[in-house]
Amino acid sequence: MSASDEYRLGYRRVDDDEHVSVLVGTMDTTGHWDATRALREWERRHLDLTEGARLLDIGCGPGDAALALAHDLGSSGEVVGIDVSAEMVKVAVQRSRNVLCAVRFAVGDAMALNEAEHSFDVVRSERTLQWVIDPEVAVAEMSRVLRPGGRISLIDTDWSTFNIDVGSPEVSDKVRNAMSIERNRPSHVGNRLARLLTAVGLEVLAETTATQVWNAWDPDDSPAPDGCFSMESLAEDLIDAKQLNPVDAASFVAAIHNAARQDRFAMTLTMHAVVAASPHPVTATASHI
Image 1: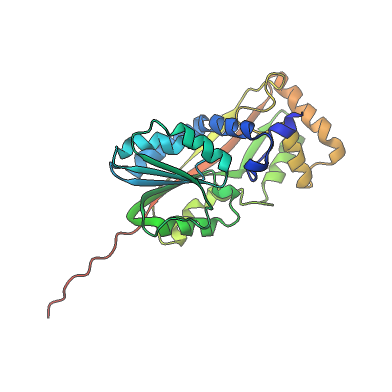
Image 2 (image 1 turned 30 degrees about the horizontal axis):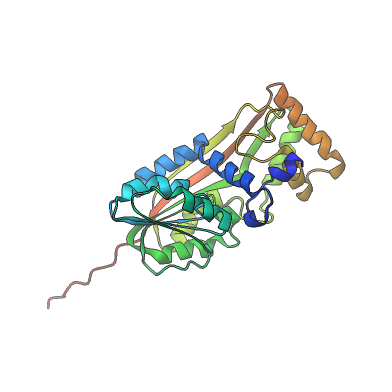
């Protein structure tokens, strides 16, 4: 079994992947990235959660982000998590057993939420829109289930910012060129989160970014950088993007591995976060003549 098989780039078909436990573990690791933690802390400050609120997490994965916010909702609040993966939902349910407030995790579609209109005070989605066929439809669904005055938080990646530096301009250029184009998914969606929210009539309250940095990795100790994909998987992606000849894949991977062994390895990736609010309903006032 190769590192490329276990540590692939992507979460499109989690339940069909024989290495689903690796994918769950990777989700846990990415949840502890410095950039992810910084954006979640920023999100928590700007969501202004209150006791008794209902929170919906779309693309909840193993539930760690939603469950971390549950304390702010008090015993009268509720957390609802939706994910396309039954395996991720199963893990989230197991982890929610000791949470004080009501919790419900279920399999669902971000573009067709099985939730009532105006039924949540807060809706969040993290690193999910990049895997959705139509992010515009998904954000419209989030807006539909949000109560007037409620808030939406979106955190997502812009893969056009992905950079790898191993002291070889040729390697860096191939990666940069491959990531600069959205091919099979909305991989740059992080840089247009605010536009998606304003397009459905929400008011953007705050925006920020955080960059994850990897500056060390031992390929003999771990098949992939912390929470990331293998270099074999990256090579396959570059072949797909016509940036790498298949016959050069092995030498491409070897160049990165050798640089990492010599402490000449660095990668960066930027994520964006936006919090927006749904307008309060307009209160009609009596006119006087």
